[in-house]
View 1 (cartoon, one colour):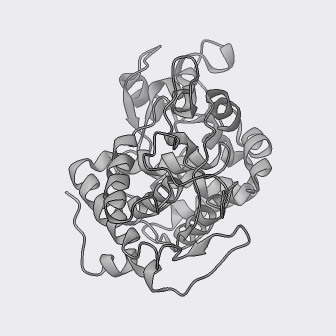
View 2: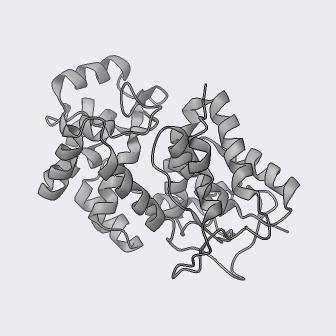
Length: 329
């Protein structure tokens, strides 16, 4: 059960108290203050209800923001339905395991009842991502809003723009992060978001059974951890889910860095973050920090704000969808 303390509610609502601040992309803190003044409160209350009923949706709802922003910018296009002849982003292989679409629909329906055709689906995804982090004991930040919804959603776009788990951290940085205006620090701290949620065995099974086509395991994986993974994931397992941060996958903390430091990460891309000396020093520092999450939380919030600026549509660009899965007709 999600318990919201009296001290947490003001933190979640703090964005409503700030004066308007505009960034270079045209996004604004408090964009809906006059047109839908209760928008963020409505979203927050719905997220509380959603997580009370399904705590495991926290990780997927955070992941949805990543998968939206990396493909054609933070424009809500990951939410659009495709067809058999015209598959959308959500139909692409990297997105087949995404969950939480019905949760976003639930939030949107509440907002449409209160303020019709006012709050964009893109902003809903951004605010929900912040709220699930806060509600799982992570940091808060002021979500810049004013995004509008894009109407392009193509399966191949997702395949070309989402970093796969089997490339090295350096490859992912050069091919996916830097082209989107993110740097090595952003890549590192955003990877810390893997402290929430689970992953299918299929995302890392090659590291257990056929690393680099050798029919052997990745030698970098801690052998005790590998044995636990082999007990859960058999070859060609496509359905079993494994906690990314064992023991605290429902809590946003610095636990994933502690796993990385012990060579107990699921993904090759995350494991190879340790090969960079600057990354390695940061990871080890977090691992030694115990319960002190100050540095990571501050950095994560900053990188989430930065990621939320990727390719946004504002002003008269795009649209405000009535239904997040459908382009307005």
